Amino acid sequence: MSTQFKLINNPDYRPNVGIMLVNDDRLILAGEAFHYRGDWMMPQGGIDSGETTLEAMQRELFEETSLVPEQTRIVREHDKWLSYQFRKPVKKEGILYKGQRQKWFLLEYNGPLPDATKTQDREFTHFNWVTPQWLIDHTTPFKAEVYKTIFNEFEILIR
Image (cartoon, rainbow, N blue to C red; front, side, top):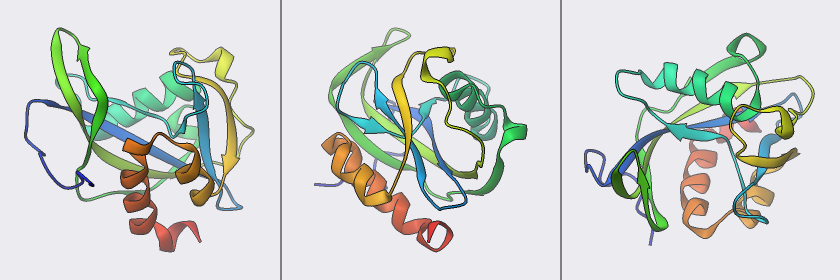
């Protein structure tokens, strides 16, 4: 069952941003999760207190990929929040969360693959350029529905 578009203001769901980076070939930057080997995902991260979604996206972009905003071009910020439940509840800053609610950004990036070993936050073992279907097939099941939704919403832009 998909949990998208639900629980937007539920305090049990951590506010978060998702980042879809696409290149000229319309492939998506994905990384293999450092703590969940074999699960691939796009960069994402929590929104700190007082941050806008844009500020959080720019910070997370740097922390997880070492890319700075000037290396990318923002194409679009999704107008809705998407949500999903974790495998099991996760504690962050003393708060137990059941899942995340995300604001997604679509960015263009045409540089070399980021080096996952040189990032501020070690979230990924390595990066690769992948198709949307490949990522759906290789991500954790609880993220697959959100990915399908965001790929559909951004479809015209990633074709």
